[in-house]
Image 1 (cartoon, rainbow, N blue to C red):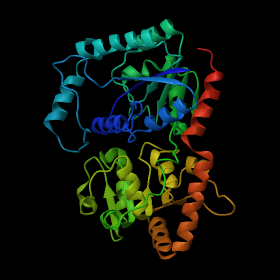
Image 2: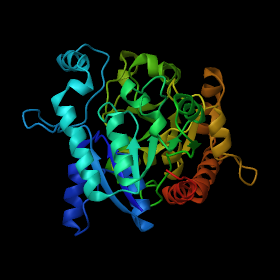
Image 3: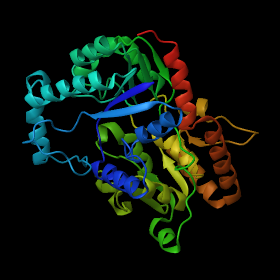
Image 4: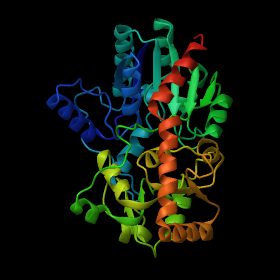
Length: 383
């Protein structure tokens, strides 16, 4: 198949580094950096013989608008950038000349590339429903919408108006998929779209310096702001403040957790941090009630003992194997503290569960597995 991704590049510096590394190694330039899940989908789909291209919808089309060069940092504070963005958001996308030009260029790219699948990555604020309809009519492609977030919380009017054009919606959280069906999507599957790549999500050999830099009893890597989206995660971490806790995030950290903040982490840096931890803490955001975030599978692939909140998807995707858990979940904050205390004191039990989790995701939850299931799903759809 010919698959055209329509996505935003969230970590432009990471993509530049990945492209430069590929050039040094004499390999084709990647479409996405390894800090984004699309990178691993790209790798798995190419391995299976598909041809890929990408349109970066968040890159300005007009030269007078500068492209972002670094990762945008989320903050609870009011900043000049936020005020400027709020003013721009008051302009309807249809009246924005730069957005209009981006849509025209996407149609031109589709006309040249002739995709069998138009893969729309979630959180779209740029591509008009009319553009998706035009490409669908022009190329007779299947339109896939892949997202890890709730349409109630994160989607925009421009996205929701296009829902009836989506032949297949792929989600992590099953409840999000139901919401997309209610908005008019033809079919949804809780795949989930998150997974692990054994070549990348694995235990890393660390130097003594790296162990000193990254080592901690409980590690967390992820987003903690804004509060209305991540308050449950923040409260759980606050309950662990008397442990040897390390927090890494590319975004702002709440004041109560700043003493434990150790910096940003993307790509291989994240894998090295996980490899240095005894326990990785991973509570889902408030908007995920079924489960299935990226870290769930990435931590397991790194061979690290993981404790997460008790959600339906966690139970489905991480069953006990050979009588041993593949992951540990907690019911409340007292239970969380009790389990962290117990497993820090019982290394043999902790390592057995971590090894079981790693073997399980390598067997059932790799991006190669997801790509194979994606092919099966596409074969059942008549656009």
